[in-house]
Length: 154
Image (cartoon, rainbow, N blue to C red; front, side):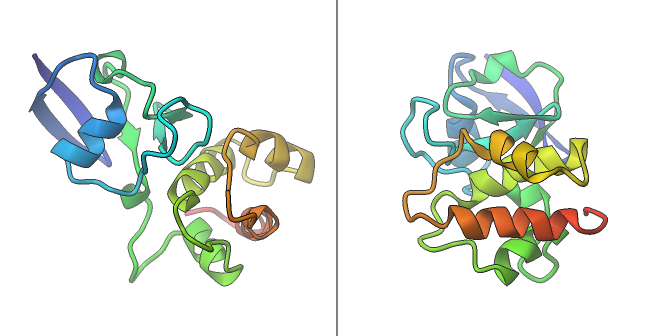
């Protein structure tokens, strides 16, 4: 089946089974490897992307369920040369250890900051709860989000 998706402001027409999880389309067809396969059950958050303004587990979302909603991945936020404010805060706070969860963490945090540019600590913690970091850098991740929330978001 032919499906058209808008990913990081670019339209893509793909021949794909409509039941294919978005994660596989992003990684295999579009070669966007920011979102990671973690558990495949929506329990870790390594695959988190933004779909229509919502943080979603891309391992669970069939590509046919996206419809016209835009998809945004880590690659759509900034680059190594020009990171977004949030990405720079993650760098400054050394929030990544192994780095596997970081794309999902950043995408979930970006969704929060777009809705609420200056969230309080309880809101940050509640919003980030679905995403797990097996290395235990949660405190640095929270510090990075607080730093990014201290000014205008990019």
